[in-house]
Length: 326
Image 1 (cartoon, rainbow, N blue to C red):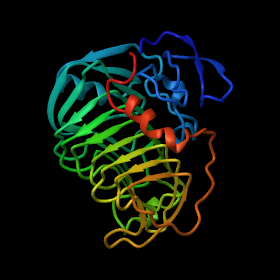
Image 2: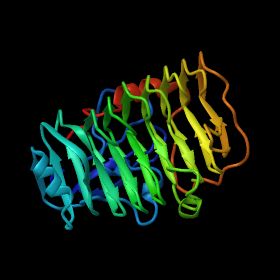
Image 3: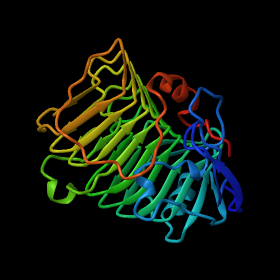
Image 4: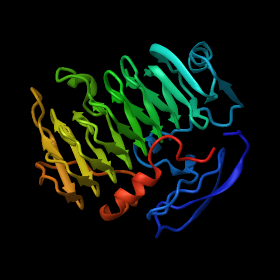
């Protein structure tokens, strides 16, 4: 992410008409069929994070490279817009506060081990191309009405709690092209049943093209948000469940591929009452039929989903850290 202005061509799908735009990074979007890893730039942002003025992170700010926990802490906590490149393995503990207008992007092989990133009431943050390993709280925590966040092309494994947890009135968020493996609690949306006053009308999140690779549960577990859009994800060998809609949430589960998932989606979870869930055009391979009910608010943004039959090949070829050109 050099900050220079370059022209790129965006294809929302294989059949879409290309749109020529000027942006701060090079990006040629995935075209809807299996392909080797390729460049994914900011023009590939789809979903709720495109709303409310969009999500640009640090924009054209000059990039700085960090190689230590102290440097990372200082860079993400600064008040000015910044593009922060993570290099090597950074070992840390706890949660590092991320302030507004930040792009945090990993160089090849970048790893954050032992700690997580906390977006607490700030806005306009992009987190991409990082392997998070062994975090002792959450890997990425988005809370306290944080808005316009894009979590893209990261890998998550072996942490204590959530890989990507979003809660307390946060809004306008896209979680895309990530891989979760060797982990239990993947993605929580809405932290408790008694937080309706802060959460209703918010928690609008898009989850697309993520690879839930034998992770156990919460892919996502949703409270209150409506509409939450879950499309083109690949679920494989999830021993707990895929998607849960609870506490009046409205979740559209669309064109996903479920393989060896006994409980792909359902209403209610634990002590949480049911929400609504609409399922359409999903592929269920050696999987249960799922539970649906109620209605979901309309999706306000443009998108073109891949066919569910292509999702496995598309996602396994392109999801996770190390699958974007820098």
